[in-house]
Image (cartoon, rainbow, N blue to C red; front, side, top):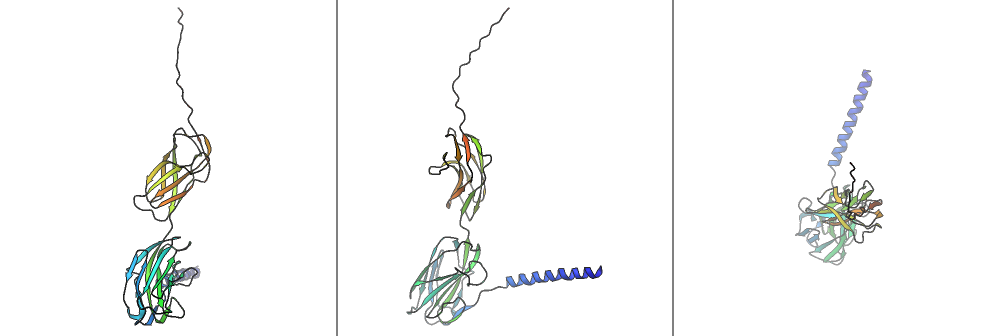
Length: 289
């Protein structure tokens, strides 16, 4: 029994040690070094992308790390123009751009490199975070170099390397939830749940919209709103005196940013209240003695 306990304890301690070593290794990960051996000629004097607008001079070692001071947001699926200006241009100068989309501390994965077009003074490209990019803070590396291979790591004879931070954001989307029950009378209330991805701005309004009786949102009817930036449920009301139908749908849209959500995914039946006509009541009674 004691031997089994000792073996069990050793096994547990080994697992703990491996976890600690793994955690330390992850926390200690760094990006490959890069720079140039000669800083007397071409260097990056201006870089513009998103909210980054960085003018700079020559730096020692041909490497500048701006990751702690300069960052811009990039939403998955949206293209962001980037401009790099070369202060001392030579024919044959080139620019490479890399973004670590999966945050694995390298620039080797497919879709992580972009090539600067134009030159030799001004280079441009468009950076588009791909579907599947990991949300959060990651690194963008820009290299200006003379002729030859354009790699994200190591030193070149000429040029400069600059690193920046990119905050990868999920694209905004709205998914309208299940509406229950599936049959309503006009004028009655309905709860419209929805979920979201991405970031919605302060002052945003989520609006529940009702289709026509055929499920078309060509001319939707607003039936409820909610001032919010997060997922929730909208308290809505089916309009009075709308046509009888068995194929109504409900969807949720937002105002900031303007986003159209999916519909609820199944048909709803809406019945108008029966019409009420004026009625004259007459009462007669006979009393016999």
